[in-house]
Image 1: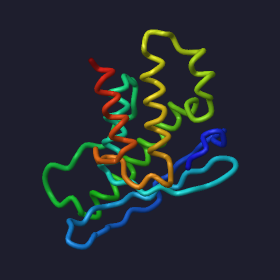
Image 2: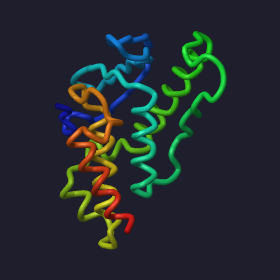
Image 3: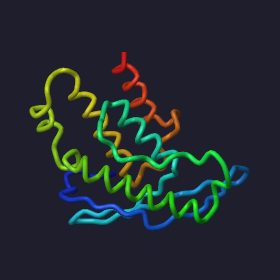
Image 4: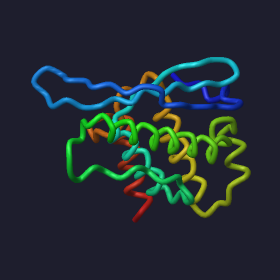
Length: 164
């Protein structure tokens, strides 16, 4: 579990990518990110669709000025080495930008956030967005983009009720 109280200053870098081919399934690419705080280092493996899920969740939570997420590949071989190296660099830039923008979420306690934020519903949206980012950075969370995942499914459902 990610202990956000440790995250005084967090840095990230996507250092590797590799192809995974589950039995009887289509191959996909995993991007391996190294995350560091002053106290520890850990790795997470995320698919491109996990980054899309994170970005969409932050947009739904009304977060603005997000770094640009690299676009989906519409034509050509999605497993092309040059394309994947470019995507790796773009996702590294995206993740680094998110951590720079939302560093405060990783060190600020929910109680402190509650005092700081206004009472118009923005607090709840920011809290959900914060938990979304924390879940993404959690090394024990394998995949995020599937609705059947209980934690992420509950967050997605909650975000749908906030939009109403």
